[in-house]
Length: 492
Picture (cartoon, rainbow, N blue to C red):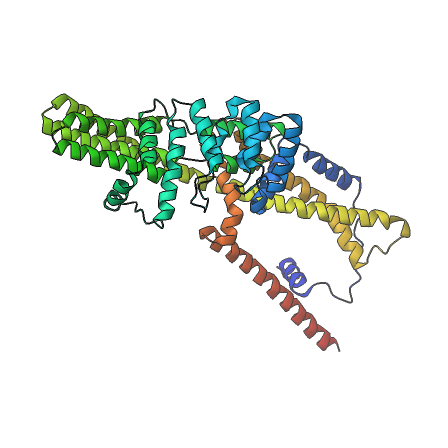
């Protein structure tokens, strides 16, 4: 009991001013060796990547290549006739960059297999309403290079659709009832109608997201793979055809099919429904398992086959109606599975949060312990020859820091490495097929600082803990000052 009382008195009151402080042992060779082991551990495979991942998560706005870096890479690639790097730069430069289109043309001319960048570099947010001859030329080159793909024709139709949106002050509604008038007006444009017709009749759908990923991954491998955030964000920024535009053309086909059936042309109506359904089926097959384009494709497949089933039943085509009913049920089941997959991924992301928390905390401790170790050991080494007073307060704290900070550094490095290792393995084994897994693996690591900053349940817990601990420390300091003042007053 007396030992516990003495311990609490020491915490509350501190050392007795009249008490002669005991000398503190200076850090020895073991502290130096532990520090060397800790510093050497920073050279472990993947440590640099992990440190850069944490740095990028806290410096989110600079986690990807910035425009000055891209422009320098572009100039170097142009001088070296490096088509791959030039394609990467053109694809990722902002739309207002002066050299973006010129470098894209150079890359496509040096290596025609990079012609796909014309779609992936497209800027759908231009404010002007004029036809851009340069973009029209790029669309024509892409259509000539990949004539069996729907996407080059969708790129042309998107230009028309987005001008239509701007001209109508973005009044196009996402509801079916709100689309009908707009789509009939839009269908009067021969360029839009022709481009969409070619796209929906094309034999395949490829929006070049795989090519974009492979180009980004090749750059990461070239620089040593130490910027996972850059790969994730640049891949996630991939371009898609305008999904509202696609839906509007499907609504146009469904409206046209209803008109044809009313006029007695059931063959033409059936062809319209099939054209809509088959396009979305091709899009669904080419889409990632949990992407927004697949969810929309499944929804439109169900709508198309629902209309086709009703038509076949009215026409007395029993087998065709059954086939349509099967396709409808399959699309609905796939849509349900899509939502379940999203829910499982969200749960897995939440489970990964403890390891992400350990990575961030250990990174902060690494920085703190490394700084403390260097300052204390350097100070002690410089002052070693001056025979300092071993009982001085400054030297006591330097000795304590020099002995324990290297151990804290080694412990923090170990926790950091073992916590980050699953992320490292996920990045090493990444392919286009499992890219979504990488995104969700790293999501908790990158989102944790923003959650602490911008809100969420974790924010309440984190800042509540910080507030409680800080309040306790302040109260302890106030209590010590008060007790020491009372003791000094009694002694006087």
